[in-house]
Length: 150
Image (cartoon, rainbow, N blue to C red; front, side, top):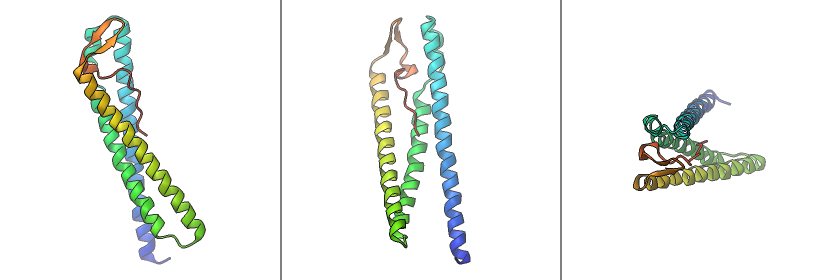
């Protein structure tokens, strides 16, 4: 391999590492949202609806996590498309095709989850979130949402 080829491969790996870190950041945002949601539920179960409403919204965290993961998965899809063009052997071509299909399916799954998050959020804005102790403030977001973007 020539020096420019190695530099190009290093640039691709650097970008891949960056987008892996973006995915990790997305997972951490989802974790924070779940922890916040758990705290709100704990307070609501204790009959402290006012305190539960003050815990904070879950939606902005999940929305941000979804945006991060969609961008990162888009990068990996582009990388897979590029790889399918640059295969030299039949085995490499089969592997590139498998990776391309995996990237397409993972991105499609993330889009489906993102759309569900957005739909659920819009529905929660138009109606309160019902619990056994009554209606919580809509600032809590949908407590039934357990979306983890990964």
